[in-house]
Length: 452
Image (cartoon, rainbow, N blue to C red; front, side, top):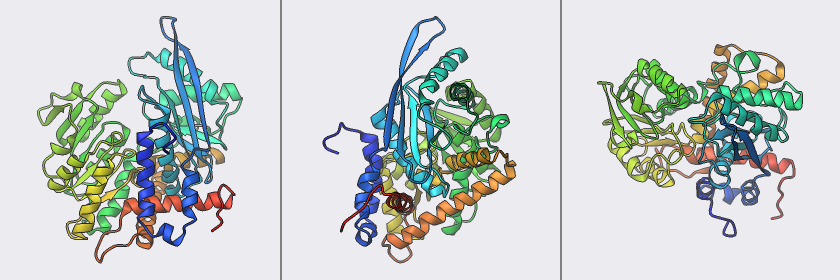
């Protein structure tokens, strides 16, 4: 990549995948997969466009819109749309789209990988300004997506309101009512359990980690969670439902530490709907607010840590602090939530401690795939013109998370050399399993070939 501009987040995602492939026996057994990695690391297509819209004063505003259609070997491109001033092509969307390829593969559903969005900041904008932006954005994006081509979803800054505006624009522009977006309203093609899916799926995944490692269930566990959006809220609620104690939530301005209750989560959810920060909820006697901090070094004793905010939110020092606090299970609800240095710390302790006292880390592409899995289930319901009950969707989600866990676990056992009694590497197993599935499909379809 030396001839390209620096793309640090994409390079981090690529190197994390490539290093686990190289350190396993995969390339030794199948050297042709090196060619597949070279091909898969380049997007099939990148779309960039301008978004011109009018603010409430009548002034013209312009933003940059993007869609990275990274890989379609397993199905239509699938991945979220992010509206945030930090969005750019090289760092944000390429790394997220690359991760999405292998996350989607682990669900077992027919979905490729993609990502998109714009450098538009919805904070401080009126409903009318957001509507006008979404209409202008979708008029251009509609040329490049479709139910059998590319099916975007929501992400940061894109919730039910924005999906509604975009879907209506697509329907009017293309004269089609089809499952072109997921996260839709329940009356016009959405799926039950979709808002809860990433958080619930994360807890279902970690349940299998706890059981396999002989750590029992959630009852009595102290759980540290970062973030305070949908993923963090529903992960926290499911933890409480299963008998755990939630000891933290956070946002970009600081962390709340203490015993978080279901009433706290409901009140914080209301704040988030109003796009307010946790500082508006920082005066509660049973909670301590720490300005400008992430929760990891301020939570006391903890059993499970769930980063659910954003990328690179657990550093090497924070990983060491979590281990010192007693954390035995770390699973990412956010995409690439831990730095590579933090992952190295967790993996080193896993190898050193073996089963007894080990730290077990699960990467986001496996642990948080529940959200996109239910998006895939929404696509299936749209194709059949059906709506499943919440119980049906939840049972399917539980099955998908169980399969994702055991796929990564068993692939690690096959390709990653380990000492006696060592817990399998979920990060290596998940990376290899997702990559091999995509690479085989690409080979079958002629996207790459090898002469060895």
